[in-house]
Structure formats: structure tokens, C-alpha cells
Length: 326
Length: 217
Image (cartoon, rainbow over all chains, first blue to last red; front, side):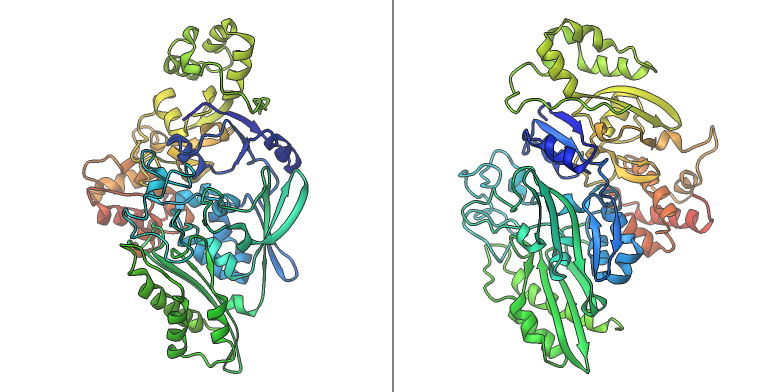
């Protein structure tokens, strides 16, 4: 690890000012500190944001508001989150380990870096780590890689679980930077790799995640997160699906679907949602949704299994959401 | 005692790193010396005073002053920002009960309690933990009286080689306190951040659940 300076920020304004010189924000540090040790990340200065007053969760009229510093464990266990947005709680508990969930903040979770092994392997090409150096995953071991949104320059999946759930729920992100505050859908935080895989998100330099706002509604009460992985817990997703259904009079009024483990960013599937609206829920309908979810999916050498697995995971996740007593 | 060092200019890179300063002596020695002195007088200050003004300024922002309470004992420390809590405990405070396994947050061998919550100390930059209350495996027993979970690990043979055991026990103590050990199934899920390559999982989860059911933690 290269030597780095550390400044402790006392307010959001102070943090943004301190980051103005090129400093990177650090909260839990579970991704950043690890990658600094590998010298994949080499910041010369960090801004410690742990003293900022962003550790809050509150319910407003029709939204849950979650401060950017809330730890994953606290968000998962929060009574309002469990009551009004159980999908978020479930997706958080399915991610990482209890120790990491006590450390990692929600803002940091959204900005975590990819787990492609070649990203950490400094002696092989990785366009994310070093633009123009190539993508070793294309011809390498790519069983864990993406089947949606892949370019010849990068095939890494986005690793977050809760990002998938937030995107299914139309959450918005509120950020503050040198030019003030702005907000936008969480979905728009993530870029496709295209020819610039080193640009992963749409924050401008110095912007800090202040809070996440999640709309509430009847769909949120019938929502499940299904994560398929190589072990029963503490593992990244091979395929994951966040589903929600609002059923009225035996007919689907609203459906939500976002998937993880398959895309180069968390993948909302609005075309599949449209297939369900106006229909009567059934296993056959959910299987049709699962098939539709694979539209456009393209396999590399080792990850072809993810295409049928995606279809089955989506079908089962909708079935699980339907099984929730409304 | 929070001290906010000024930011280094963006063009900072030149100038020797701490380790390269010929007058600084061994950084390891300095850290050990700093750690054993309760209070202020730090050996590195004398060597730093010989360095150029620029280097002194640079070094001061790459180091952080901390107060930690470790197993009930207050420690005042001057640390290198690159130190993890794990390295601080093992190398500066000589508390080697906490083990370094993967050093990347995947195995749980380095689990400690910070303000009562379990974390992996390998991924914790020590500089972020000023004022923290830390409990390590060394702080669990009262004199010769083992913590109930330590005893339960012996009773259930919750280990073979023992390398993961300190982390397992610290994680187990927190798992019980969180209320996540009401059944073996639940305990296994909530202990999954701790890997045991000998495969002593049956004994580990039995020990954790037994102590949870006994109402002790």
C-alpha cells in the first residue's frame, strides 16, 4: 500500500471541500482498503466520512429515507425497513457476512468495485484497472461473469445485492458535490462498460452519496430476493432476482424485476414486468417471465449455464413473491 | 482527541515514505515503542524533528493519533495510516491471539469486537477507529475463568488445528448477543463469515447454540 493522508470530515460540506483536492471518501473501507493493499487502488489521500450525520433511517409519508452512512447490518435489522421494504432487508442479509455488514455503509455498497479475479491480478490485462490493457476474462475463466451488457472490453458483474433490490423498487440517490446537490434514480448510477469499463458510475469528482430514498407502495409488501450461489451463504450471486407483485382482484397490477449476477450492472427488466401486468398469476406465467428475462443474453465460454439458471431463478422468485401473504 | 491533519497537495508523491527515512530507524520499532508508552512522548518525534520541514508535514498527514481501549486498557497510539486494526493489535500491541488468515475479509480469522460489534480487523483501517472499545480473544476470560463460549468450544471439540478458533469464538460471542443463535441452522447461517478449513463446523455450531440456550454470552 502506498502512503496516504487521511482527513476527518466533520460535515457534508467539510467532506466535499476536503475531497476537492482529489481525496477519496472512506466509510467502512471494506472494498477500498482491501484494494489499496493490493495496489489496485492507489489514492494519495482519503477523507474519513464516518463522523458525518448520515447514519439515519426514517419513514416519511410515502418514502423510506436511508442515510448514506447506515451500515448494512443496521439497515437490514431496522424495523421500518423490515416492515415497509422487506425486500431490502432480505437482499442485505443475503449479502456479505455478519462482520462485513457491520462495517460496510450503504453508500459504499453501491460504489463497491467488481469481484472479477482479473481485476485484482495486476500482472494480467484488465481495462477497468488499466484502460487499454485488455480483458483477460474474455478468454480466461469466466464462469462467474456477465451474460447481459458485456462488451469485448469487460464482462465483470456488479456484485451488490441491495443495489438490485433498490433498482427494482425505483429508489433514488441524493448526492452532494462541489456544485451542490442533485438526485437521480439509483439505476442511473451504474454505467455499462462499453469501451470505457474504468468508468463505473455517473458521480462527478467529489460527489458524496448523502441518502437513498425508496418509494413505498403495495408492491413492496409482496417482494422477494432469491440469490443462487455456490454456497448456501456468504458468497456472491451466480444469479439473483428481486421480484415484487401487486395483485388486485386476482390480476397483476404492478410487477417489478431486477436481476443480479448476470449483468455488468444491476439489471432492471421492464419488458418482463409488462408481460405480467393484467395477467392472472400462475406458474406458467412466471415461467414465461423467466424465459423472457433471458432475451439478449450472450454467454462466454464458461457461463452458458447462467442463461437457463436466470430463467428458472426469475420464475421461482416471482412464485415466492406470490406466496407472500399480502 | 481527534486531530484533523491538513490534506496533502494533489501533487504530493515525491518525498521519501516513512520507511525510507534513514533517521527514522525501523518503522516496526517505532510503532512498538509508541504503543507501549501510555501518554504522549513518542520516540518518532525526535527522529522526525531531524527530517526536513516538508517531510515532517508530509509524515504527519500519513500518520494518525489514536486513543483505543483494548480489553479494558486505554492505549494512546501514533499509527501509520496504512495499518489495519489487525496489524496494530498483533504487531504494535503484541496481542497475537487475533489471527491473520486471508487478510482480505474472506475467512473471519481476524474477527474482533469493536464497540460490541463483530468486524473483520484485517479490512479495518486503524486510523478510522479513534475512541473505539476493542475486545479481542485475550480479553474474553476473567483471570483463569474461561468465557462460557471458550469452554463450550473445548467441550464440543469446536476446532482441530485451532487457527480459526479465536475468530470463531469472537464471532460466536457476537452472534449470541445479536440473538442469531437460537438454532443450529440459524447459527450456521450467521457464523458463515468464519471459515474452518479443518471442518469443525458441527462442534462450532453446537458450542454456539449451547451457550445461546444457556442464556450466557
